Amino acid sequence: MNKDRISALSDGIVAIAATIMVLELAVPETVSVNSLLSQLPIFYAYLLSFSLIYLAWRSHHNAFEKAKIINNKIFVINGMWLFLVTLIPFSTALVGNAPNNVLSEVIYVIVLLLWVLSFQFLDIAITKANPDVPKDEVRDNKVRLLMFGGYLIALVSAFFMPILSIIIVGIDVLVMAIFLFLNSKN
Image (cartoon, rainbow, N blue to C red; front, side):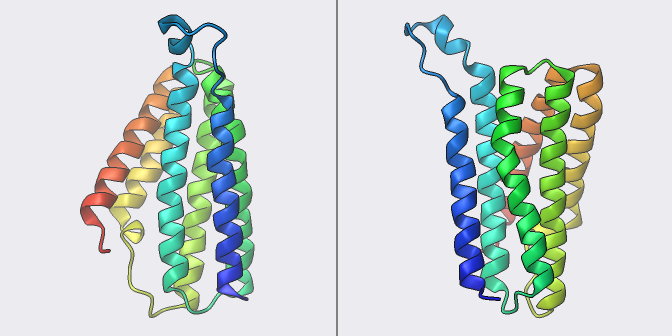
């Protein structure tokens, strides 16, 4: 498999997914504080999803940059990861338009959880195919516990207090970003 072609396709799909979400931010017919505040839930969901996509793109780039071998297993798992990233704009719009709805919150968190899980499988496959690849900070068990623990708590809270779910995801994203920034090796 040609690593550069897979990376280029991945970069393109990630860029489109990150960009398409902004289309959910509607320009109000009359510019007022109230009309702009009505966009706050979708903006918050957009901010979270964009941040997650950006952080994941960084990790994806690091993993593929270090890998020498890209086998069929990596190719297939990367395809699943890309499929899930294309669901993020839909789930972001859903939760942004109905932030206190159980189903929209559950769908949003499940999409994020499956997407992060697929990246973990991708990272494991890259590591197995390239055993000499240096360990990234995303392979740290604390980071994995933070990601999965935060999403699981958000998923459970979606059933009892839906709006709390997206707040928990936001806290999780902020803590992950700080952790990655403070522990970055490059």
